[in-house]
Length: 354
Length: 258
Image (cartoon, rainbow over the protein chains, first blue to last red):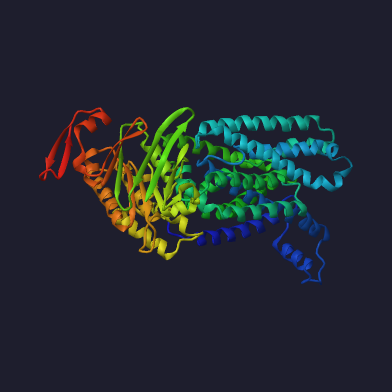
């Protein structure tokens, strides 16, 4: 643990985020140069009138590339902050939305709407359609999270083994449900559920940016207010109570906010695993377990890392693209195994990183 | 003054604490003793307000304990628990600062930092502050936790009487620090703080306590207000151990030997 201040980290991470956004905006099936980016913005906001830039490329940049890059940053932030919240709540470093069922539950809810939505909404599809996807994703994510949480918490203590097993079972159930919907799906768009189950940002548009951007920002701002209470939870639930914290209320609120931000992101991009596991872990090693720090820094670092992963997914098989979930899994799963081994070893000695 | 009136506590149909009434006078050192499973921790949890009694009432500052908000209570009493299982890395300094959580919103004030410093100085734990809490020994963590608790109920001249609950506070400490911790607790009695501690060592209890409760099978069997009142028959009845009492200093200081 070093002496550099929280602000130093926020500042450095913010700069890195801007750099990664710019780099990421350049590459893909069509590469765009920095000069072009500057010209596009200049043209868009009316600073440059003289030379008309390539209008197809400009449209591609503003309609596809830019929303995708920004969406990616918000999704990375949402999943990473969720990881930090869940880890504080379960008082365990090997928790993330993918493992406790939040993501797959949300995906099931979303898949349900994809396939059954038109039938359910009937002639109102156009009016209530846009709200159904986030709503069902939220319900699915909430049910799955609560199920895992209830199963793994006995007498106020979270049993890690039970939690992981309950997570496996709930994930299997949700994935089975999602598989069922993609099987009975008729139109080819719904069949893409399978692809979407591995996470994809190809559906990014400005509407998606709005939804995920607002839900993530609001969610992070709210849960930042609970960061001190989450720190106290580190002592245990009874002890946090002695410090004046209503732990039952806190837990329910955190689960709700957390499910909200994960479900909104998942309803757009599908399941992207492990980013929520790695990011808080890296930050804890770099600086501190203080949730006041973890929540803000996870948002920034999560946005950076997911942007880099998305960049890789666009480049390695260009002009086609690779599911981003596979990349995060390839990087994240080994980290997870490493943490699991270390956790079981250290458990005998008490502390996790001791 | 902390006053329990006809309280009892049941889990299912098992009675952990039989109906009892007890008074804890202000600014005194109260000790609860008894064999394992006697209901000591249960009584402590009820008095500290973390569990509600199945019946009866507990009054603190003439107000029923359930009427205080969690936050009000956090500023009036602190509890040192037996075990802490900390899963994330945290510096001892941050740990002690948690004691001030009820007092600040996001960032600690200068006063909060000052109080943490004084609390750790009292426990002679200053040199541990920069270390990772998880690398400390059992005794060192006890000192840091005690510092945190002291910071939580740090009193100023204007503040109300506060209570310090200690659940087996010296179990991991060596002889020197057992006495140091209890001396610190005793010193708090002079700073408008009431101490209620669970201890297992009868001689430590006799040395520091003003008032000892002996519990067995969920009942308060004996209460003594003077160390001279201790008898071998109390010890035999409560702990089922034969003992002898030696009087030092002309009978002013009884020592129990086994």
